[in-house]
Length: 387
Image (cartoon, rainbow, N blue to C red; front, side, top):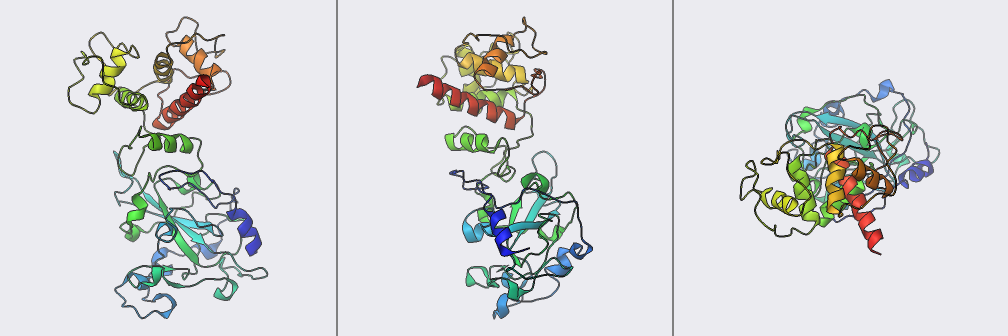
């Protein structure tokens, strides 16, 4: 397919600004086809690193990065872990056992190739990759230094992504994520390729933000907002854990930080809340301001997971427990439930629209991504109501 088509695809970007500067723009298409050409069945060990071949004929030693057959990372070139404008994701592979994406269990790390477009009128036969003469590929060591891996040299395509683009050029650079590629880019299929030898490939720029947040998911902006406000630092330095359940201690910390980390009126009296811990002041503040009465009169149960009903109840109390004009209308929210007024208020203010149009799912555990969205919407409501 022509360079013009690929350039149109690359303009489908998310232009959000974020201090993290990570996964804030995307140059991806929007439709995947269930096609897996046999020509894309090569493995990275054979396609990328079978021989010593220094980029562009550079006079580097075979032990240096520019000669190992792999492509350098996009963040080293552009400062962002994204495909540069004018390129598209053409395929992916995973590395198991790297440790980079682990929270409480092993998780794979994913590598996505960002390929150059081909010039108009160029074909690629059945290979999926057009000749070098059909692209503007530089084919050189990144930063023109032998210790860096090559860029725009390797003519290779796994082919699980953007399959409606039959021809691409060399790999410009690659991105790394802990998010499954088919969630990161909807054009990617789940057809798996594995190269565990790449699990240690890394650069400092890959650790400048959360690597488990897709660029355009329904919760990305909310998590970015929380990071920007200092409300969260993640479950690790690199991982937010969007799918993990939110605990009562975590909610307390989120709300307390959102409120500006106020000094609690008095220490918490719950027997399961130790002093001097990261959750001590947040829980004491919640108890002292009436946001929580505890799980019982003497316990807070800080590690218990928070339900959707509890989440909106905490927000409702933090707002001063305003009275909703009308019931929520959700079939699973009884009028006499402790959370009925909170859910009605949350729906009226746009903090929630329900799990479905007629159900709220009050007893479902709220994920960290969901709570981020609830709190971001609360902030939007608060700002609008104050204006």
